Image (cartoon, rainbow over all chains, first blue to last red; front, side, top):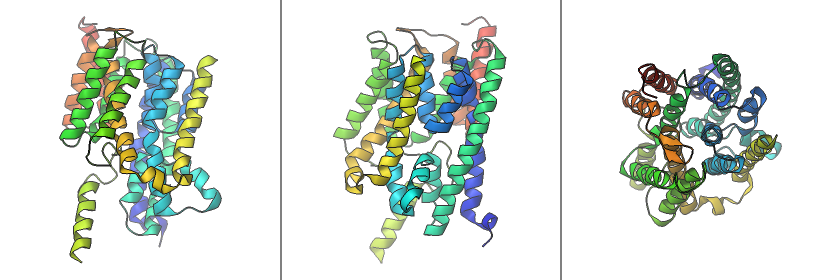
Length: 253
Length: 103
């Protein structure tokens, strides 16, 4: 089979373009938050997890300390560990392959692989999305960082408003159903209460603890909040529905 | 220089977290409770980051043009705009409100 005829490769390429492009907003916001070009590139090259990258610069932009920024980024990256476990079980990488594969284990590569059936297509989907996003995300981060440096006063261009919209945009796809809205509301309330009481940056960690406690003590979907920012399969039924369907079929057989 | 240290530690932790999924025995991570906490925490952190960036100004709350960016971003998302459009709408809303005199 020619590579470009593979449905997984097609999905992987389109998700790469959609996700990679918004690296430009990360680059511009990082430079507006005072990070220099190489610091900004270090995030996209080495951290390579959109949510964590935005979290780090968001905490620093709000006056938070480096350690608070690091903690927020690390906590936001926890779900990548779960994805790693899922991809390890699904794709069974052998030996040294685990090391590069781990680096590109993010929301979108996991979602692309999970949406395919058959190990070959799953593997093609994962690697196409992972490598494609990595390359484009870094190119567009550089473009954004250079453009951000050239803009001058970030407030005049509303870049602080861009950060607000970016975080809402990352949150939005995860708000499917009543429970995630309730968690988001509880975390927002905890944040507003904490802002005047603790140093900048710490309210975000308070909210993380509140949301983590809700997850620990309540019962609900175990994949809550594990949606990709950009859905590789927007026109199909949600993955939860698909899993439901598959379960019903298995039970019927 | 100090910030560099935290950036590099954060990058190291991000990679080790991803890698742990490939090496930690699946039983440990497969616990539904751990998965739920990772997921609910993601929602909580993103909600909190949205709020902080919209209304926090150091240790006080401020209601300024960023609130307009929040509303405009929400409307764009409601209309199913792609991520990059949402970000541009947010920035345009804040910039316009500032031009109109609301800081």
